[in-house]
Image 1 (cartoon, rainbow, N blue to C red):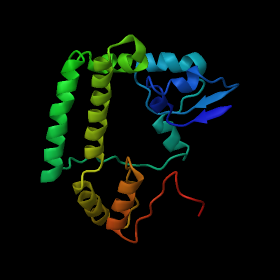
Image 2: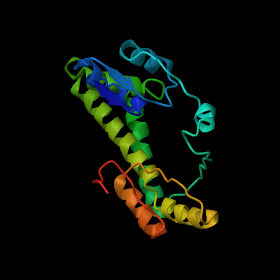
Image 3: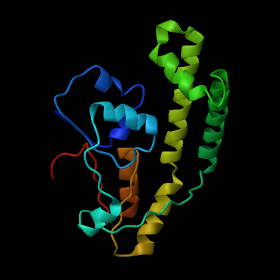
Length: 193
């Protein structure tokens, strides 16, 4: 059997191969955020829904701590903004080459999944479209001003505990280092402590 946490991240066209190319006697799939009905349908074919716990129920049972989520706007610095705008222009160009905003994502997925059935130009446009998307995400996830904002949040809330979620381990360690000795980094690549 296999246990897959954050299973919603594994239902993309590329990651579906996990399910299509392997067989498991049992699958336990965990997620809090499968809102897309098509993804739910696909997932429930091999891992039917058996149990749901609401956040309210989990709080009442003491399974999770009471919490607040703060989403704060963070500006890019000048260099990051320039890089983002340059990348965004390339993203829009490849999006248009792939059929425009309404069709680009599906077309890119199809061209990459069925490479032999489409022109090399379409496949290359799909590769570049995804590359621009990844670069854009990375710029957003690792904006240097996030470190400054994270540090100010720690001072704002004093002795209260908080969690900072970061997309990359390196960035998480940068945030932790900026906050100082009251911060601890935890991630999946750590050895046992």
